[in-house]
Image (tube, rainbow, N blue to C red; front, side, top):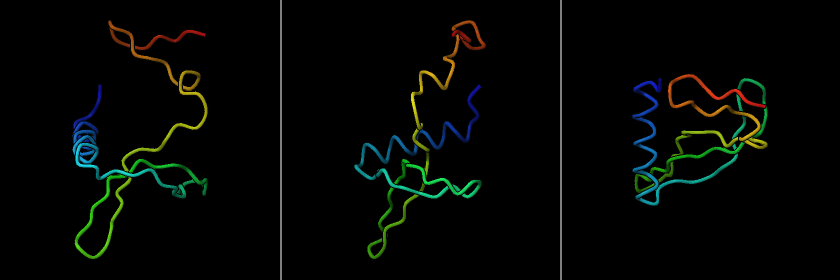
Length: 79
């Protein structure tokens, strides 16, 4: 089940996309130092821009990395 904070963040990201306030930028992951691509909401306060990361782009083929959900619950764990 998707938790409520992820739903709220997703809705905030959708609003940012609809308002043209989203960007793709590089960031450095704190846990391992890897450079990754982040989807960020952009806020401008009149003087400075602030980027809030919402998601990390999947490296590689997402169809090979993730199992899709099954309609009756659980996941299709094929291949």
